[in-house]
Image: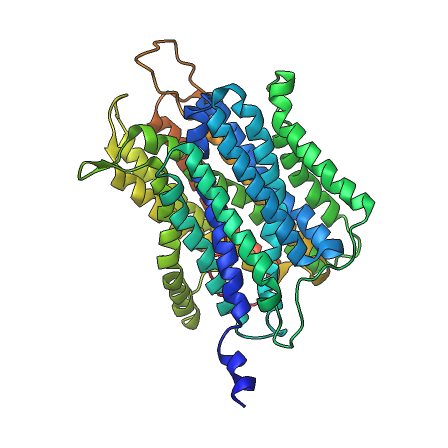
Length: 510
C-alpha cells in the first residue's frame, strides 16, 4: 500500500536527476555568458559596439534554434538523443572558446565563430527537450507538476547563480574551460543514469527515439550548422556592415503573425487571442532588450566605472550577474504569495497589467542607475550598490513578466497551435536579445589616456549619446513609454482574451 501512495505525495527520482543535469548545463551557459563580452573587448581587442552586436547575434540565435531542435526531437530523435547531441555540441563549443582565449587576438576570432556555432546549435537540441521530460515523468493532470517545475527551475537559477562566481574569478581561458567542464559533468551524468531514472510512474521509459533520422533531416542539421556559421562570419568575410542575422530574426517576427493569422481555420475568438499574444510579444521585446544589458553594456559598466572594491579585494565584474538568479530564488515565492493574496480578494491585476508593471520596474532600475551616473567624470566610479539595486529591481520586473507571459501563451493559444505559438513567443525573445546587442552598442566609448584619439559617439534616432546618463536615459524612455502604452491597452487586451479573471500561478521560467 505504501508503494502505491508514495509517488502521489513525493516526486520521482527522475525529477532530481533532471534538476542536476539542467543545473550544470545552465552553469555552463551562464558562466560563458558572464565573461563573453569582457573576453571580446579585452582579449580579442574588439570595440564595444562590435562586441555588443556579436553578443546580441549570439544570444538571439540561441532562442531561435530550439524551434529546429524541438521539431527534430518530435519527429525523429526523441528527448534523450536530442539532449545528448545538444550537450556534446555545447561542450565542444565551450572547449573551442577555451582554445580561442588561449590563442588570443590573432586567430582567436575564427575559433570563436566555430565555438558559437556549436553552442547555438547544441542549445537548440538541449534546451527545449530537458524541460519537456519533466512533465513526462507524471501522469496527465497530476497536481504535482506545478511544484515539480518549481523545483526544476530552482535548479536553473542555482546554476546561473554559481557560474559567474566561478567562471568569472579566473583568467578567461580557464573560465571557458570551467564552463566546458560543467557541460561535460551534465552530459556524463545524463548518459550514465538516463535508463535508471527516466521512467514514468507507469514504469515506461520516456524520451526514447521516435524513428531513425533519415538522410534528408541529417542534411537539415548540417545545413543549419553551415548557415549559422556563415551568418556569424558574414560581416568579417565580406567586410560589410549589413546585419543579416538581425534581418533574419526581425523578418521572422513579421512573417510569423502573417502566416498564423491568415489561417482560415481560426475562429474569431481564437484569432483575437492570438492577436493578444502577438501584441504582448511586441512589448516583450522592449523588456528583454533592456533587461539583457546585464550580459552586455552593464557588464562593461561594472568593469570600468563601478567601484568593486570590498575590504581591499576587487570583485570581478562578472559577479554582478549572480544577483539576478539569487533575487529570483528569494523573491519568486514572495510574488507567488502576493498574487495569491490579491486573487482571493479579487484585486489581482490582469496578465497585460502585470507585464506593464514588469516594464515599469525595468524603467525604475535604469532611473536609479541614471541618478548614480549623472555628472560622473571619465575617471570616476559609482558605488556597486547602485548596480545591485538595479539588478534586484529588474528581477522583480522579470517575475512580473516572464512567468506571466508563458502562462498566458499556454492559456490563450489554440491547442492545435500551442507548440507553434510558444515557439513564436520565444522568437520574440530572440528578437529582444538581438535588439539588446544593438542597444548595448550605443554605450559611449571610454577615453584611453595612453591612446588619445578622437572618439566617435553613437547616435540613436538622431540624438548623439556622449555620456552614460544619456545612454541610460534611452532605456528609461523606451521601457517607460512601453509600460504606459501597454497599461492603457490592458483593458482592451483583457476583453480580447475572452476569459474570466483567472491567472495561473507559476514559478519563474528562464
